[in-house]
Structures are given as C-alpha cells and as structure tokens.
Image 1 (cartoon, rainbow, N blue to C red):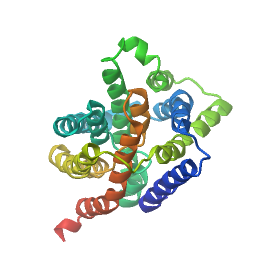
Image 2: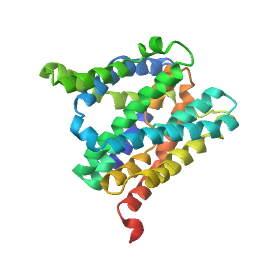
Image 3: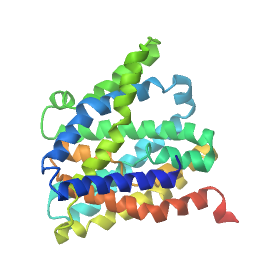
Length: 298
C-alpha cells in the first residue's frame, strides 16, 4: 500500500462513519463505544505485538530516532497549547490542539510513505520513530490524566501502557507466544486504525463555534510545517534523519480521538482537527517528500 492509498483509505472510512451517523444508523454514543473497544481490547493487542517485534539491538542502533520522535512530540504539544490557550475559550479545546499538534500518524500513514520513498531501510527506521510516538501517546495520557486523579488509578484505565511493558518484557525474556494467541492479537491489532477512522467520522460536526475554528490553523502550522522544520534541524544526517523529517510531517494520529474521549475533552473538536489537518497534509507531505528525497537540490 502506497502513501496516497493510505490517505484515501482514511478519508473513505471517515466519510463512512460520518454517513452512518447522519442517516441514523449510528447513535450519538456510538463513537464512545468504538473508542472503548480500541482502548480496552484492540490497542493493547496492537501495542503488545508491536513491542514483541522491537529488537533490542535495533532499538539501540536507532535510539536517536526514538528520542527525536518523543522530543518533537513534547515540543510541538507545548507550542500548540501555548498558542491555542490564548485563542480558545475552552481549555479542553486548547488541550485538543496541543495533542494533535504533537502526536502524529507515524504508523498507518508513516510506514507506507517511508517505504515508498526510501524502500525497506526507510520502513525499518520508521518503525523505531513510530515506537517513540507510541511511547509519547502513553506518556501524554498518564501525565494529563494525573492532573485529574491518582496516576496509578488512571493508568489502570489505560491498558495499552501495561501491554507495552508486557510486550517489552516478553520479548526481552525470549518467551514463546503460541501461534494461535499471536494471530488473534494481530487480528485485533489490525482493527485499531479502521475502527478509529469510522469513530472519527461519526464524531465529525460542522457547526463548530468560531472560537474553535480560529484555532484549527494552529495545528496545520505546528504539525505540518514547524514539526518537520525542527526535525530537519535536530535530526542526524543520513537515512535516519530523512525518515525523521518525513515522519515529523505526518498529520495528527487517529489515536488523538481516543485520548480526547479518555481525558474528558470534546471529541468532535479533536475529530475536526485531525480530519482537516489530514486533508491539508495531502499537499504538504508530498512537498516534504520532494525536499528530503533530493528534489530541493536539483
């Protein structure tokens, strides 16, 4: 699957979710139920199997990518919040802008884009950059939820965090995972992205207040422009650096919608931020590809 096909799949499933809600097949609470399935079943399965595939030797080799990924996520999250806090009337909307500015779609979109641009070596590097994004999602949830309740109590409500620890320990110990269990977990994991895309569509609203509409361009600028520029400055030379720049240019992660639900934000605002930025990225990502692949110097 190429990068363009991945973008079109997202838009198609988002439209399907939106249509099902508009015609009355999905109710107002359907998105919450879909997000709960992702958090408590599909996402833990995906994270556990992903952690099993992360070789310790490869992790050490590409450690800079993990650090850059997490650093950029933190930096863009803070920038997004600082800008949106001055413009948004509701603090929840500022938090939504912060999350979507920092957490990118470095897996479902990042993998095929890096594969088509750099080949198999680029895909390998993208896996480790995405590993940093996965850790950033977990850290973001634990840090933000701790402001509301006891961190340990809140962590129990986020099984992906425990799945990550279990997967790393299982792989490090070299334990065998029966094929039936592995295939079942992989099947569940593959459902994460399509279910979130449908949920995002079911959450979309076009009647957003002006205060929300005014902060949407913040995500476009921070996530699609500032993020790859900063990555180009701090990333090492060579393939890892080029992959870091391209991954930094990805639109917001679909997982932001689930985080919005868990953190008590307004999911329809997050849905609008993710969807609009993904559409805009259809123009910005090819531009970054052109630049990192040497077109800018031709």
